[in-house]
Image 1 (tube, rainbow, N blue to C red):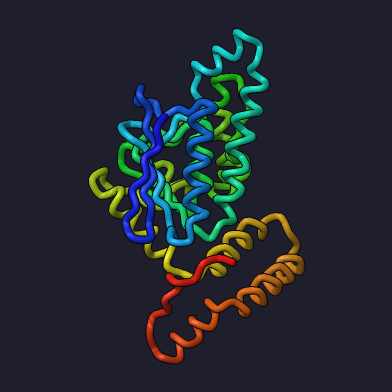
Image 2 (image 1 turned 180 degrees about the horizontal axis):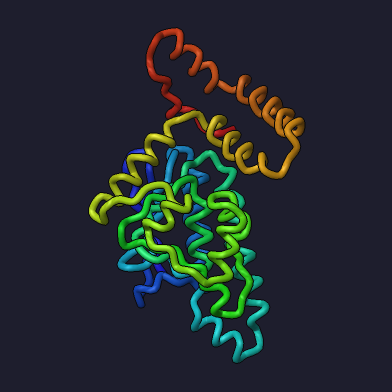
Length: 264
């Protein structure tokens, strides 16, 4: 797998591609995805990322040939631990980082690739896109955050039937279920995803980061606990220079410009 990066202003376009057009990752490939996305999230000039694939595949998850080789040399457990040990910390950071990440799903998102798409802040899909579990047909349980992310989008029972029925959702089905946010024609996919990335990426870093954290915590905490979490984060935000810019812009009747502020 290769990972190509093109920057357009404060937005980075990250394209996953594989020599076999499967866009499947082995340990080297997932490490490359992780280092690329982490590097962009470290870059204060990058406020948003569009993540997409090539051909008919967004990302097919782990490479099955690598699994077969690991089974043959009795190292499959080590390989799975290695892959999840790289992928899962990346997903945790994506969920809490102020950098907005939009999945432009051009084709199939399967296995760990599905988790990668679900961990993004929004999902724009082409008419050719589809979401595939693929875990059960391999005799595996899900990873890549699928069992945490998908129920929050579509509900627990809808996620259960998707997994246990080994379903494939086309773009319209995924949209109806709530797993993706928009469906557009293929030739409009990247431009629409970039437009949304710019729109969401322009906001204050504290606003974006805190809101991500609060939305992820709300379904597993008591109301009183969530209120305390909100109180803590809004207090922190109020002491940041971004808030001063927001207040000044409001008083001057103009749009705020948070582009010159980096996360502390």
